Length: 550
Image (cartoon, helix red, strand yellow):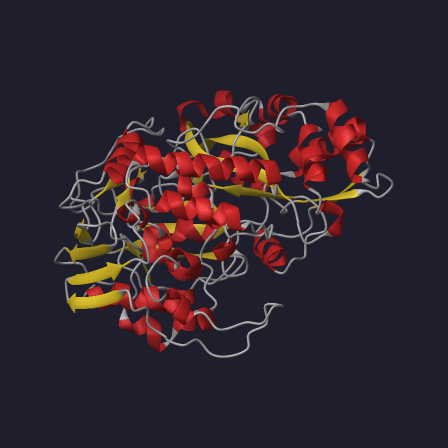
């Protein structure tokens, strides 16, 4: 693995930590070390409805990402345990100062339309995603590249656009030749090579820019599977193996059908009956019996997943941090984990998952049940208990019982009634958050995009990541938090970076824009039709590895 001519302790330590993560579940039947696949056949996999068309720069949620990771390969790849691997398009990513990075590409990579993957494929895609007028949800991932601000349209104090961006290309991106490009950051960021395997950094062919809308329904990637038909909302589509794939691990199956379900329980019934091959998420009400029913076809693996309740800070009722702290202390996470998830969730005591270096046990002061203190804080804040709390969650994904249990505890512990708002599917639920449409605490989850504690903090809570351009759907903004993140990003050592990230987390957990709920355990099932099913630490099935049994 080649990172830098001058050793970068921050990156080296982060990757070393990732390499120590526990490997994920699954067997190793029927795999080869790269090359042409032998198994052939087709298999089906569950997904929920993606929020947006299948464009890497505009896909910041799990359902679309599961599909994109079959269609694309990035500069670097992440192993099942989260380790960074140089098995992608990049031959090397080097820097002498952690600010200017030279990226050299491997030969032989092509898009599914036969055109070559070049430096321009990355530079053009990154500029397109960063440009605010393109309204891409992954735009903020490029905010540390020089010239990013020039690609953002000016706005007034109310956030209304008042003009056009000053530029359409970031000054920090420079194509040297077909296989080399330079990235100049606005400040040092030693973990930059760790980030670029994420979907927002995927390349795009020239055909994408000719018709982005068409490319969103029939994507043209460079990954192990290709799209030969359009994605149909509410249904899905079938991808076929790309025979000219340049990566080390070709797809084992001839094709994979991504099947959209509105209800996870229906998908579970289908996999029980052999009508669906892979279900990445087991419904909570099936956890007590799934092990006995599926045996070794029930997979459990460490997860980077973090479940939380976002608080709409734009609602006056929740503007006082004492209210948010009180709601958190009125919830018995341990009881919900045992009753609803049969121990398959761990009560969260931080906003950084335990699988990442920088996690601190007990970091959250307000994540422990304390009914007396919760009621004291609500009284101090003048909280109106006569009005019910609306609890939001997306429909059809098995969250009903969990959120209802939260509501029951709030009613019992602080004397406030609740209303369940679980009528929207995922593709409707996420845009409403971006539009400040939440009227009470709302359920969300986060799995890391890349193995760094920074990824649990900056994308969710920084001012640069405010929705709809980013994933900050609570609309939290604190200049002190932003400064601490920037100091961590610019740190010269892993220890120094983590110290700043920990300070930022402490500030966040005092302000409490979210209520940490659970750290996840990945739990998946599959039919007898397939083997070598692996669910990774990001919560995704590694579709290229799946073998169809003869």
